[in-house]
Image (cartoon, rainbow, N blue to C red; front, side):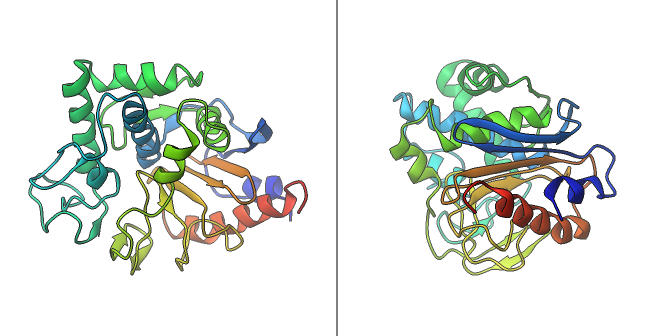
Length: 270
């Protein structure tokens, strides 16, 4: 079944899909401009903003940030020792992969302290504005962006053909950081290892998986509890962005991989 037919059958209020390549948008379907919560897909935009600051020399990945012994690199890689929520570490930095909302909120505070800007203003100046993304951060740097799927598509295109980061830094960000760390991916399962880069989840060999079975192990991206996701497969040179308006749940783990494989099968040259 074609990808458009698949997403059209999902029991969701506002299905929307964008498929991109290095040249930009390839195809679209559904409520392309409907504004919804991106939830944790926000972390990709926050991470990209932090990496742009690294690129420009305003700070480094080794700058202290978060709990004692933690750095910007630890926070981006969910390896600071902070829990999902709450300010008190539950282990030392670099010991476990603990998916942490508070860690990304602290990155927003770190950036604000370095720049003297509110983080939403810095995010707009560094990422949203240059990429022409009409989205707004309404709340936390970990989960507060709202926008249409077109905005996610513009970041996916940027990741395939970067203009704001050097290819070298983007490659570092999308390569596993602190390899071999075990961890729990909320809503999916426990993995050993749980592969993550600098803000980007990396597919690796995880099973179960919210990405496609035919995505390369190098595929990276993020999903959100609002039912949105973005992945980029650097081997297939294709990206997929989806928003649904339905909270993440078992339905997503059943439906998303099938859609992803259909999109890959329809890609030019496949």
